[in-house]
Image (cartoon, rainbow, N blue to C red):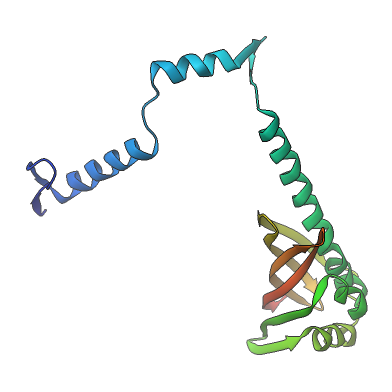
Amino acid sequence: MKRLVLPTTGVTTTVAAAAITTLAVAAMIVFPLTTAHSQTQTQAQTEKTGTMTKTEISKETAADEARSFSDYQAVVEALQPYIESAKSGDGKQTRTAFFDHAHIVGSVNGAFSNSDLDSFAADLSSIGPSPDVKHHIAWIDISGPAAAAKVEFINWAGFRFTDFFVLYKHDGQWKISGKVYDSHANN
């Protein structure tokens, strides 16, 4: 075990102890100890009802939460034409989920694919329907008018796919700006 001198204290210690000390100091900076004033303030904002505790939220926070939930649902809805086109095999339907400039990059059976939206839609139509395809939206991350989403598909034309989408909200409407994907193995 190496020994070193902590520069701020002049204390000699082991590397492991120095790492713990550094983490503890960082934690105090990020998560300062609660003061008596902030405890009193928190207690004043908290209302006891039976066995549950309710903390009041400001009108601004409530509005932010409502907008966040609304945007999440809007992104889910924006992905639906694409998801439904997996079942129908309709390239025109998938095209409606994307901005015209969208680009699609990925791989099928390890072969690199680089398509504009029209080529991708035509390829999807040529594959045809996959009525037994299943999907799962793994996550959605939103920051203002920008979002990203990960959607997993299984049994799409006999493949399992992982799709990563980048979306943007323009004139109040979410659309897919780009997609990167991977086909795993055949089902």
